[in-house]
Length: 193
Image (cartoon, rainbow, N blue to C red):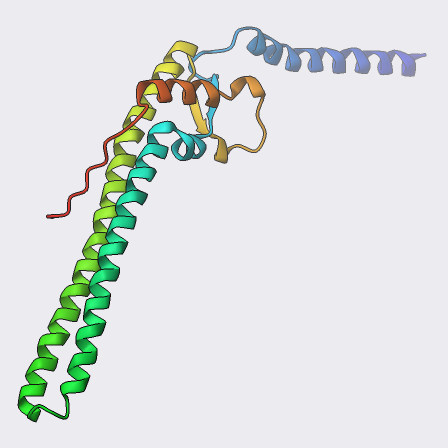
């Protein structure tokens, strides 16, 4: 019988120890500390950057300018090809030093053309980068405002998260707000730079 009493005391002691260990956790769950508990919002940032009406508008403007640049580049390339043909035909007709001078001038024109084509590409890249930077500022403002309204203490890119509750996903609301705030943009093409 004393063995039975010892086992009962051990069970009661174990229960008390477990109860004491569980109680602080239960208490912590009842009253979360706002400094250590995060209220989370998830945003498909990349999706919004890709699909927002302003970014679609910017990409359309850039594509149109790219087509115009490409036509200009092709016209200049054709002119250089024709000049190269004429130069090749003159090779036997001109003195060697005169031909070398004309060939040198032609190579200079080719180098200038390449510089022109690369410059046009830089203009497009810079225009897109500037639009993205401006749009990102507006998007971050919209997200910050929504986070403040919802008292969110943590905002994550959807790409960073594997599993989340649907209630945390605010992408649609952010998307609607940014489309209303910034429906279109004017792309600046700095061709003289």
